[in-house]
Image (cartoon, one colour):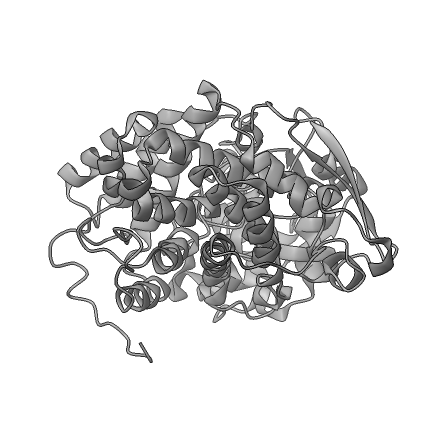
Length: 511
């Protein structure tokens, strides 16, 4: 890895293009370094994981709306078009709209992979837009599964490297501002573009995807699922413009009116960003982790701990047995999904699903009472409205623990943690204390996810909406990803059971 010092420069300093962060990103994307077998296998896992959670969301309202918008934009003249999750491979739309529809489907349930450091991220959000472009241009450019693997590996690398170094949420900027540049870089790798073209696309993608974090604050709306899809769509369009010779604001990060100076740490702000050296393997995907449960990643370990307490301490399940639950955890968990957010909606039984999946008091309560977690049932209005749940829910608070905050930010994978300690006071005067560092599915957890678990997740979530033969077809194709020919890339989609999507009312809009 090479460390790049990034700071604000006044216009009269004339920062050389080759010294700008967007150019450094472009150099990584243009580097023809091979992808290791280990990285390739993880790319396959995440392609399967994305399809799993997309299948589970096919009939949900935001996904239906995004899909209907995509269908209003049939394939352009520049290629063969891209597939949309749920529809037959022959039904093609313009690639930026496929990126939009499939991106919403992947993110809707908040159920795919994550990487947390200085910033938050779901790096699997890179896969829909990069795949859409690969499908669209497969025949005309002779793209293969190997090219797609390389593009996805770059997308993960750039997003995770930025997430390790630059905090957006500290300045109330939404985390997808790191996704626009990473997707543009990934598409650049996929298409074998030169540094200049990728540089312009990265700048445009960043410029058009900076937005506030209000989409993840208070009453959280369906835009939470749309935000990364929008970033992917903008990145596809940015690459298209760059290919046509259009330029971007420069320097986009370091300029005196740029992102750092006015959206992040200000004119005196600076960062040290590590990126792979020339010829180095892009291995950042191996640092990321997926979800066993459909909830914000920082809730994963807490669901597992609550499940364990449910099984080991039946006395906790007696009505009125608990007087208070205090969760000692990291700064991020406390202030983003805990009581430190000061969002009354996190304790509201009528709150949206998007709000409840960002409420650790709610999630811990339900997981403790039920001993399990379900992506549908655990969020139902009936489940949230149970009187005994509301009573227990209102006893749960969070507090920041400096040691868990330190571990959250640790660069040592063996020490980095996303859990904490829970202290439960009982009405009989006794006190129960337990803790958990990482989720069971984490690489260092009790039951780490491997290929078998990714496949099982896909089969479980796809069973209600896909035919058994379609499930097996997709799994067979996805596991051969690096061997796929151009003609095979269109099969990297999932087709719903006959009549399923046709039976759902489609909303009307402008298109």
